[in-house]
Length: 520
Image 1 (cartoon, rainbow, N blue to C red):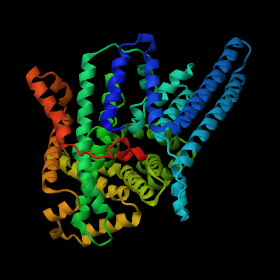
Image 2: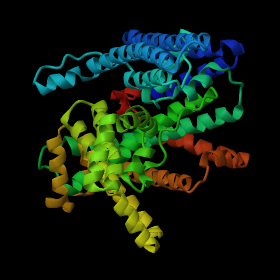
Image 3: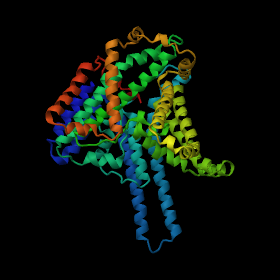
Image 4: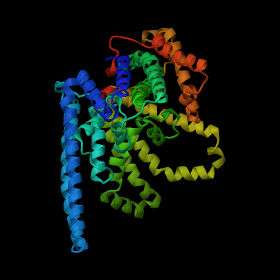
């Protein structure tokens, strides 16, 4: 299924959605989602259904244990002592924890076996087994587990209807790229009927074509250059080529991932459903922490709520923090849980990308930079207070943006290189073997980016930068476009559509699997 076919599938389903009776619209969404999955990855259908049913059943059982316990306490309110009530709740919590851990272990084991077996085989020089990786398994597993933990922690009520919960797990636009939806935000939108809204259709269509432009015109156009640089034999390209390669990868990855998110978010808007935001102009971030609050937002908030805070608030970490206070002072002890939590979170995020040395080092690199930043935060604040006139200026803001951009791109070397040693070699060449004379028009053409493509890439990258800068300054570009006079609006919309059609990179391999994050 090509991306245009995906967009057409979403548009066609949305038309049918508004034609069926309101009470059956969620059924149409479920049928469309399971139909999409069955036609794209039928062999993976049992896995997504297994996740849906096991998480649904465990959450329902947890809810019933809690209800039974509280009902028993209410019925015996006058006879139970506080210690007896505490004992009842403790016993119920223990049973609930057993159901929660059982569902977590089962589903994370399935994810780990299917996703990491080949990586582990590589550690021992064993031929990969080539196990099936079901479509969207990371996204739907994380989304389902988040719901289960919310039910366990009393933040959500368990869903009684298994078919409706299956829709929450399998909503088809999300399966390719995410975002990882939160139950409280997404489930009501999926199960409640939406009335036809022409504005939602127009907003969704504009976002879909903007996503296609980022993916097809920019990301896929710079792809041959990036692939050529990062697949070159050791020493054949100097530091200037390595620098252009990582900058190209930075552009490619952002446009590929955010373009895909725009596409699926636009499809969801055709049904009147608003998915969680997943990008907020990350390359305008002023620190690495700010960058990760803007990039893959749904994964970041998932890790924050279900890994970072639970870990940072554990008893061992609290004891370690108190011990550090006596030796290193209050500022250090307050920052220590956050520092350790960031290392753990990004180690897990690195493994989520893949259980290979480059991804693990990429995760550790980001975690350690964030940990050091957390520990040095008091010094940063003191510097800001002492030099308020300097830090408040626009020049210092630009410096922080450029500094963050450099820090992020150092990490992208690990993310893109096949082996950690290759990343170190390429970074080293930027300092010790720059060779700027190697960068010529002929070199670009050899790397798959001839002059016409380079010009198109440059112009549309500038367009992307300009629109992103306007959004960063608070301009609602999409809404503003739809409020323009009709002739101007349609002129710009046709320009967007024909830009995708004329300048998009097309090929026989052009499908949803061409997304970078499809493999994760």
